[in-house]
Picture (cartoon, helix red, strand yellow):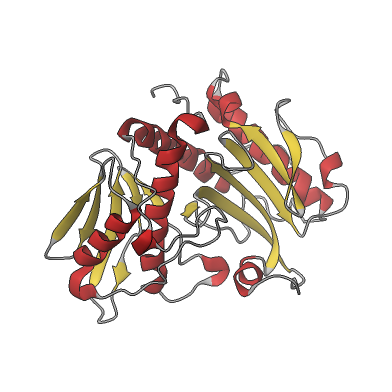
Length: 303
């Protein structure tokens, strides 16, 4: 395999913001085209061989279709059994123009969405009015996709060690993070101050893991993990490798390992697996999970 590419946030942040908003629009089309699933598992996109995909969707009349971001040819593809429609992804294509052209490409599939961003305070302009975000650097996007592709593979390997309830490896479009989540099987206490979206996401005890390219709070790409509900003394638990750390994020704690540490390690795969396992052990042990009972027979980690 080629070496993992560098992905510093600042040089491609305008492109990342534009791509993030495009992905939100496609994600909302997916959300409107599927029945709900627990923990909002009907809304994420998935990494595929050329970029990101919704997988199979159905319009209101039952017509099947799929939307794909081809991040190698740099086009959005709307495909039905009889037709393939494309939108060129290029510098200068604003969020407003992308939104309009996607709805034109959907045509008589007639999928209606709430035309405004979700979950990112910095994004407030309705999609049809957003001409500010229109930056697209193809080379940076390809590097981002390569990191997603590689990380997806390692997350998938890590997932094979667990035999409890577990999410697929998927990309949540509200925060543009690739994530996989393990559950203890026990219900969590409802958060009275939280909205309905949050309460549905956190109905059960979990330890979640992910990757994101950086944002206004964390100014570098990183792998992360958090435990919900956060058990006492979680931050006192050790993490590996040595460069991993606990940090405060909102009302809770995040285990963080910078992507650059993984990228430059002699064995990036083993370095990331070590971090994921240490974060899982920290959260699950602090929360009193039955780790032995949740371990798959595939697990290479000694009991």
